[in-house]
Amino acid sequence: FDLLDGVYVAHTKCAMPIAIMLRQSLIELANSRLAQDGQATKMEQVYRYLTGPRFRHRVEAIVEKFTDMQEDLAKERKATTRLWAKREAQIQGVIESTVGMYGDLQGIAGKVMQEIEGLEVLAIEASPPDAE
Image (cartoon, rainbow, N blue to C red; front, side, top):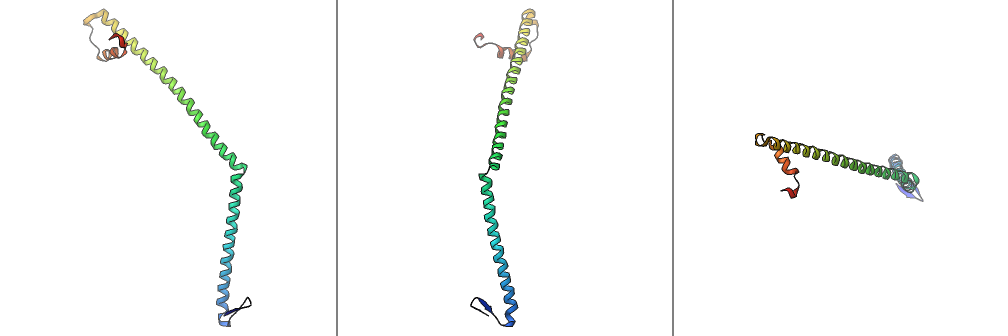
């Protein structure tokens, strides 16, 4: 077979195989062009999306949610710290009252009162530094 003036010329025996080969080549070329056209179209769509208002609104919504979460966490931390400080003060008050009552009873009963080891330790910890 041969190509003469843009026309394929072939013996009749070769005509069908050449036609099948040319058809397959044209189909592959068309598919390749479609893929390239689709790729360019998708790139344009992505560019329009990234530069358009929908993308900006979505990013703003994400940033807003993160900011809300940070603010909520800060509020929770502040509230929890306040509760812990309150509980710590309550516990310290109970310890001081218990140690004071134990000291009063020791003063009244003297050596007769049995020593309560945990309260002795608490009395040492609760005493002011200049009292030692």
